Image (cartoon, rainbow, N blue to C red; front, side, top):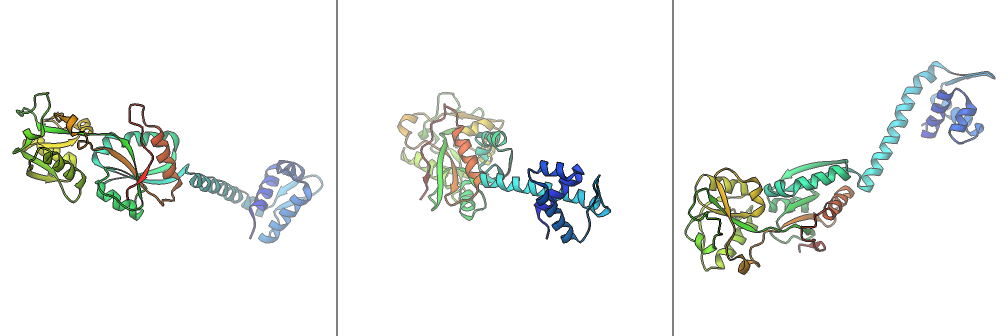
Length: 312
C-alpha cells in the first residue's frame, strides 16, 4: 500500500515538473525523492512520469492519480486537524441538558460562550427536568446538566452558577397583588398550583418546607412538573404558585409576582439556586473545556461559585 509521503512526493513533482524544485519544496535531496516515486510506481504498477534530461511530464496514469492524490492528502490533513481538535476539546460534540427556566436564564449565556470560544464544537440541547438530567448524566446520555440539586447522585459533580429565590405568582388582579410582598401564611387555604413529587421533587420539598415554617400545609389544587405549566394554570385564574425569581423573565400574560414577605427569617429555606452538573468520570474534552470557560465567564454580580463538589 502506498504511503502519504509517497503521495506528497508525487504531488510535488507533478506540480513542479522538476525533481530538483520538488526536492527543495519538500526539504529533501533528489535521491530519496526519486526513491519515493519509484516505490509508488512499483506499488501502483504504473509509470507516472516521463523523464528525460530536458523535461518531466505526467503520463496518462499520472494525470489520473494527481487529483485523487490531492484529495487523499487534503483528507489526511483535515482528519489530523479534526482529531487534534477533539483531543484538545476545540471540536467534538457536547450534549447539554437544561430545565425550562434554565433555558431562559442560563442557557443563552452558555451558548454565547461556546460560539465565541469553541466555534468547532457541536452542541446538542435537550430540555429535561432535573431528575431526568441526573439519570442522563449517570448514563452518559448528556455531558452537562443545568439543574437544581434535587438529590445526591454518586459520581455527579455540581457547581453553583446562579443564586435564586422563590417568589409568589398570582393571577393579575388578585387581592394579594399589592406590590408589598406576601407572607407564606397568607397563602394558607388558597388553591396552590404544586410541583410533581416525581419530576420536580426539589421544588415540591422546598414549598412544603416554607409552609412548614408557618405550621401549615398547602391546599394543593393542581400538579405539574414544569414551571411554565404552573404559570399557565395561574394565568388561567386557577390559583397561586411559588416559582424561582428567574421565571419572571418569561412571564405569561395575566400573571403578576410578589416577593415572599419576611424573607430574612426564611433565608435558610428560600433559595432555589441553579447548578452546572457533570459526571465525574466524563472523558469528553470539549465538555470539560466548555464548563471551564462558562464558569470563568460568570459576571461579577453573580456570587463567585465555590469549588465543584460531588453530590454524593
